Image (cartoon, rainbow, N blue to C red; front, side, top):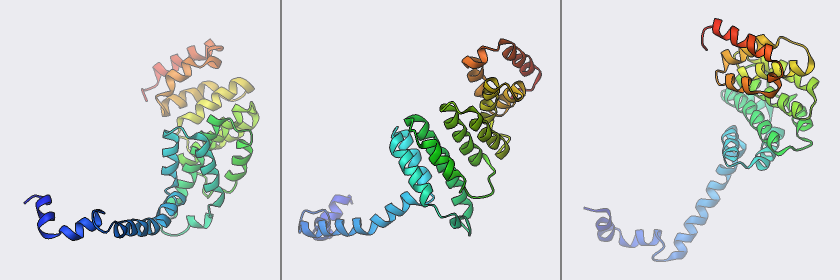
Length: 231
């Protein structure tokens, strides 16, 4: 028997009420009750550790201003004590993930106070400051500083990014880039590590205008890559 037949034969009145065909005020009342009951859950969902997913959604929609404001708000009200207990690891990872994504949004809206705001917030980040989420967060801060032409501060944060996770390739690339600007560090070694840990960096490096000004560096990099096993 089809659903339509079942509906019409056994439950015509009840289903008609729920669908609003009869006594529409009852159907509307049920909808209002459901909204009231679900609203706290939806609000909690946005403000909980799952806020990282909500921020990802805003980034995909290119709502960078809204994403930045949401991220800063979430990080500002975060209680580090939430990192304790059975759900601690989830909160810990999400805090750093939200921070990194907030930096991503900040880079795209060019907000003047973004760097100083996030630099202050990161000091309250949960310990230990290790792992790829932490490294990505510091890498985001280093990019923000670099965007302001504050290469010294950028260097400090990219050093923290490398220390937080030595298997994350992007910070090595930025550190090599800063080495060109500040005339320090081991540029060749960092570029090798960047490609070994992040294979998609090779084309980016060889197309970078800053590195193109040092053809000898790229030539030596090419030689070293032929010696090294493919990443």
